[in-house]
Length: 135
Image 1 (tube, rainbow, N blue to C red):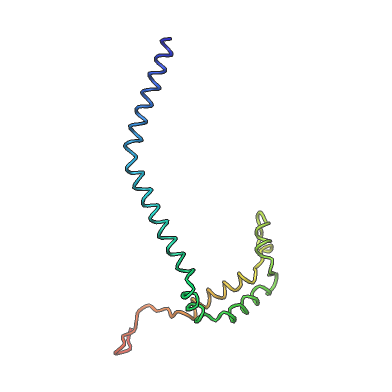
Image 2: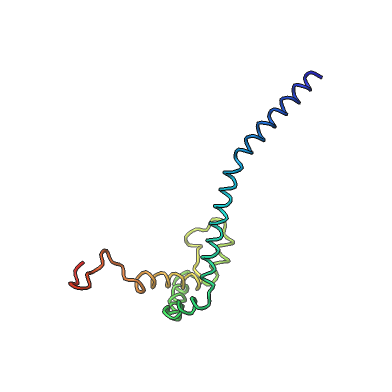
């Protein structure tokens, strides 16, 4: 019974230390949870902006959608590329380069990226002075 009493006393001492430790961590855990929830809410708010119908209409009014879809179809039909890309890639465990395919959606996305980077924006190192037209 002495061993049982010692074991019970040891377990109780460990439990007391654990309760004190967890109690001291509780304020920090609460702060971290609040920061995480705030970041999550902010992320959701950002995503919901993309669902705004007015914003979508405005964006689509400047994007050459049909031209980009045509380029996407051309990219997808070029060489070994097919419309079956999502299924083929999902089913492949370790696809090799020759097994990978591109869907029309992927081709359109690549065309959109190229348009956005090369045509929509003008990349500059320094803004020219409006008065003297010098960098």
